[in-house]
Length: 184
Image (cartoon, rainbow, N blue to C red; front, side, top):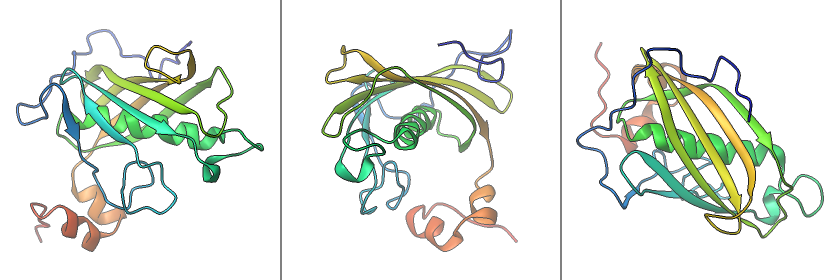
């Protein structure tokens, strides 16, 4: 995959540092929002991606392409695959225990992904420079060591939790994140 300079860490970028309160190796990562299209259990047609961290620094997950995820007959929609990559990358940045949002996502489609296929996803952070996090991911067909069907590189930007209150649904945020407080 040839990445653009926008998703390549600049010289001097720091390696990511996992948060001491982050999940330990082998630990599951919970959903960040119950109705999230990518990881939420309460989204009726979502991807329902559940991830674990094998080492405290990267994320692994599996996603099975269903009937509601197709574009061409019998094949996964490219936008759904991009969503799966965005979700697993977002889960990997969650290990830092800071709020980030996607600024850029580059996705390369290498193989068709038929309905019924399980994609084994893996994501990791390649560097941090100020508020910018640089990340990569891959989706392999059928097994963690199977052929790579999709790759992605991303730039995420660290934001304050107020970002979600100002631009999203504050009541939903407070209902699922009781430790969130808006100061007047």
